[in-house]
Length: 302
Image (cartoon, rainbow, N blue to C red; front, side, top):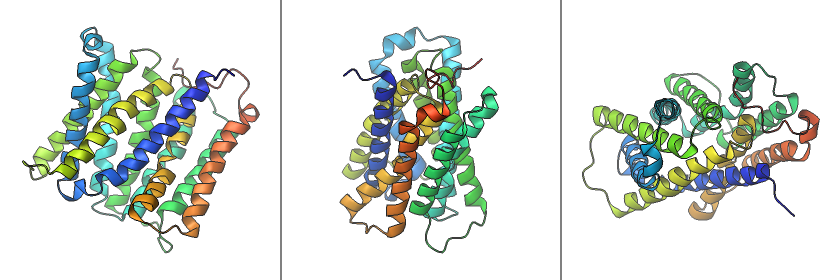
């Protein structure tokens, strides 16, 4: 049986979410040794060097419009990492994770706003269901939403990640996917290192654990993952991509249980089940919310 391109795109996005979920455990020790933005900057610059070498011939043919598009995507990506990391200094990790995950539900609404095309109630309902699942996984039992500086930065992070997904969807069908990927990674690395040099102490000697985490996150969680995301978004919608990439949360919990021995709670089990149910809602009943043949067209810019 021939597998459709849209199904391959879904599988790629799920695999990307798995890689990103595992990256939480990979960097757990690393960011305790060197400043967070220094690690992020070095990670993205390592990725840029590798991808730049692989796609050097394509980069030589890069147009001004492709450079600008990659910079826009990279700016949103860098803002997301900056806001998330700085926000963590002023709020709890659980609340930060909850607020950052707002991008899952922000994407379909921004899609409707930017493209003036209602995406349908079913994907919105699925995004809400996934959002509730992430909420149950991330929030502690007695958390109350009070918006301080860290909370507002985490919300900014969610909007930045949502805009990055939409920017990819906007440009990936017009320009070379490999050029866009390299440029956004370079921009993110430069902005992150620039912030680190300005506001963080510089670490001159990196231990082996940091190098291992950097190699994994640089090659798998950045090089492969962003190439796969950009390729997959050629064949699926931005709201659908956001939903599948939201599986990063349950995957991170799974690897935390396996590697770090975290004890599963009823809340985390229910939350993961809700996210899985949201995926089924989109995959099993697509004809209820989109006519046949339209699934891969809702990110086309006019």
